[in-house]
Length: 498
Image (cartoon, rainbow, N blue to C red; front, side, top):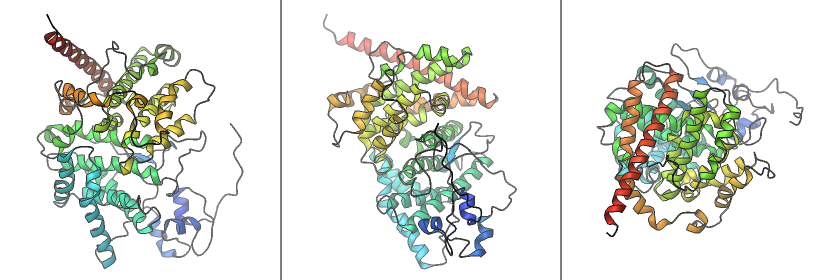
């Protein structure tokens, strides 16, 4: 590792830069970082020092992760009686106090602008090929927010501000609004989770978790502008682990509140808009990403000594690749997005450890997102993230470099329409595959199983419960895969000539 460059430490920097742990240029009357982000600086306004100093509170505060894997940084909400699973959520370093109040005309106009943009444009971008979900996000969700779910209201405004900012990246008002409303969302959302999920707040908490996931994904577009970096402090490219944390948070909320959500006319249509999860874990078929599992047993024996750990690692890889294969066949439905929420906790740990196989799987996942490049919160993701992951590998690595060629070829493809021969799948059969998958149960059936497992394991230690969920989910998916294969075999036999 090359020696770190020496630099002059800032010992007289402004309070805001110190809180964000970034170097202050100490320029008066307003430092460069505060000027860049359009925020008040205590050099210029000493009276704001108290506002920048966190006051002690009686309620538990979220624990901020010390990982440099992503920016904005991630935080973990305190476990609650209703949500025993860890639900890490994206948090912003030193979030701004809400700059918008109802006392001035300009602030009221900003909120009106954000709400109008959300209901006319942003809402249509939160669902992929689902008119029913679009209508819910446009009409039903704002009406639910108006009933008193302040964290949901703030989440709508935060996502709308970020969407507007994608068209005007340097607009300081939009920057402040996006950060401030999301900071307020996370604060109130965390407080509500701490009190417990119940029938009255389950829908609003689910929708807020989903909006946090959208915001976490889209905010990476502006990481450098917001004082972060797509490179960590030691090893170059920083993995977007907050994406997994936020989407896994949605899964945890759903699993713990399904007893109420299963009857929701808001949540169920949104979940059912996702294509049915039909995974092939049998290993009998020649799947597209099968080469990502080549040599997996040797790796497991080399890394994991404990048999239980070996099993979790094996299943984590098999399940992740099965999701890739499934999404690769039906990418235009938004299926690739399911990957973030459905992979196991063990797979995320493998990513955190930067296992080459996990990184290669992640590169292929980002390659799948190329077909969704027209969606504003996914624009440029495929190229940026694939190139970042590839930078972690040696081009002379004969084992892994060849397995990175498909995501590289897809990410760098110039046209918006990728031919089937380049993609590796026939678009004509996409609808047929969807129809077949529906016969094996919709996405709600997958949630039903997850909820039952979650309820049965509530009294287990958190680590053991998470591992058990991974194992049982894998076994159930394998059973469903075998049942589906048998069903397709019987149908083929029925239609074959005698």
